[in-house]
Image 1 (cartoon, one colour):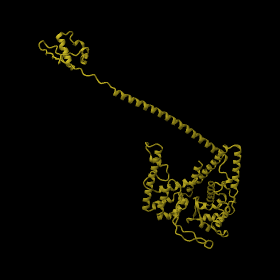
Image 2 (cartoon, one colour):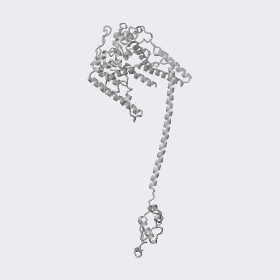
Image 3 (tube, one colour):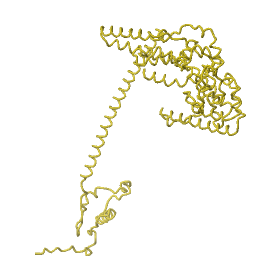
Image 4 (cartoon, one colour):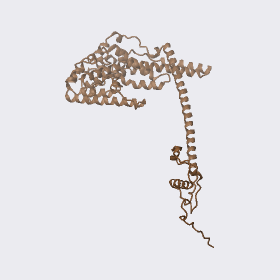
Length: 492
């Protein structure tokens, strides 16, 4: 868990520039550089430089945001309006109205970008639905698109003023809480580190635990033993960078020249990264990656705390950018000329005892939930194994039944041979005499004659035999008409 928090903190540093920095970098890259005092610092050789690469905002719609700004920057009218619009007005959406005046080519391209973005979101929604097992469930894309506030989902075909207004406001809103979330992540990191340390102590005997505690206190004291840290943004701190970083005489310190030297992209503003670079010398006093007692995650938190402090004091527009004028005004303030001492992280615990207690309870609850899930999964596994055994038994029984039927079929007895009647031999008629024809069974008894003469009896018997397909006898023929029986001669 600690490594996940660490990685997330490192990844999230890309967010700190914000969309406003992106706008300024793209649209002000050709701004006229401010003149430098050539008597105090040697003018560097002019080099042909490519426009500065835009910093990833970290937003899930960062690519869409970049492409929209790229095409708006190509329109001369929109570019001029941007230069003449205050940052606060931009955030309030006043710049979005200028979209109606951009060229037809730009508008057409923006329409295409929006259609592609809507298609991308629908694909993401469908993929999420499939992962959640809802393949057969109808997806209401219009309802789900409502959660993406940076575009107007009711009109997925054309890019309108409302879309630009939504994009600007959403990007601003999404980045406003960056610092707050960053502090929360660091707090969790520190509490988890202390939790792991306490858990490790529980595994030691009394003597080992005492040695471990002594070593921990020794590392804390060693980490706190460092040179004085200058207040971020103060004259002393800036002069130290001027002297040690720029190699210039501290007596010749000039805020305007200093600003131009460290405005690395020449856009007329100090952004997050440019400000943070100014604190590297101060951080090197406290942290060394080769020291056991120094935590590099804490170093990055310290760097961001310094940048946040300076921006809160200097950035009058609260747009995460410090202009030259704002910088010059700040360097003359009393708090920067005679600043209070800067309290580092070892002097300010990141969490309270109450927060630590709640964090411990949360970890215990998480462990219980995981254990319960493990028990449930084990039960499910046992049930599946039981069902599998039943299926295997049924399969064996079915196979045995099939084999038994095949054996019976192969052992079936042949039917008895047919009866052949030769000469005047009369087959036994007992069975037939004792049985009535089905049609006769249905006839009422009163329709049958009560008595038969011998001649009538033989005729009736002959009729019955004929109807049932049996050989007829000649016993009922009159005398003199009977055929002679064949004579059998026994050959020697």
